[in-house]
Amino acid sequence: MADEWVRTAAGVKQLNPASLLEKRQVQAVSALLPVALLAALVAVRTFTTDHRLVLDARALGFGAPLGAALLRASFLLVVALGAASAALARLWW
Image (cartoon, rainbow, N blue to C red):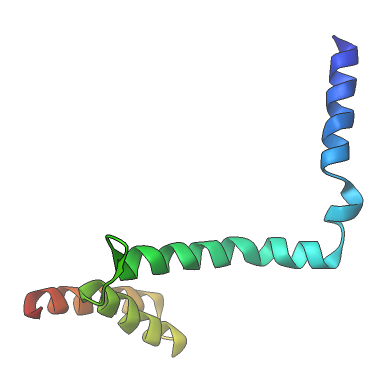
């Protein structure tokens, strides 16, 4: 039983060498990768429907608070602006 644990630990160490994970480039990429994946997921879910590009109330509900966030507005204002702009766009659209 102990031999199996030693072989498993050695195999994991070979697959995941510490020297590779300690490189600056790998750390930089691993720090930014979750942000990029989340941004891509938000973009796909917001702007597509049935594999087509759609600009509707969701786009306005995303764009208005994005502009406010870029202008350094407070979090509560950004959330309220997103909800209000999406709701008004759905009423008029």
